[in-house]
Image 1 (cartoon, rainbow, N blue to C red):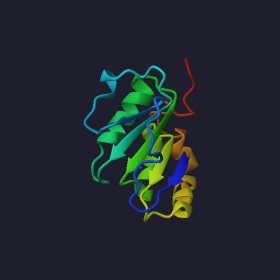
Image 2: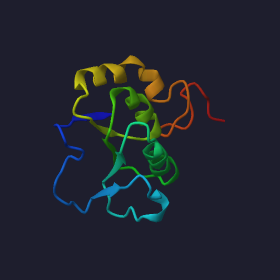
Image 3: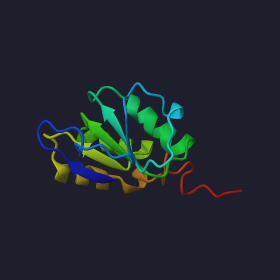
Image 4: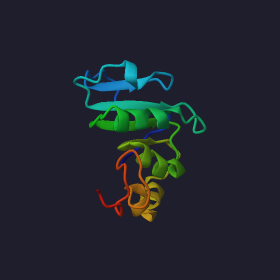
Length: 133
């Protein structure tokens, strides 16, 4: 997962509009938008206790087969990163008060867990140890 450090007050990386980037409100249904030509989707966490963006990321990556980047923005905390990665996020813009070095350590702590070695997730549906029939 790519980590992006935010500056105070910043919740998105770019101030300009890019037609290849889609920003979805956490109340939007990803199944109802066109993904044609979209390279990155920004999903917003208005507060860390609001987990609707996890469901959106899972829908986009697993059910809709979106292959571009899915970025978490907003109130993104270090301790959410493992679950974000398992849900299909490929990038996370950390809240300004979060330490990127600690975030890297958190992601590196359980590498097998994060990439679906022990459990299936949005990135890899079956664990690595399951032999295909």
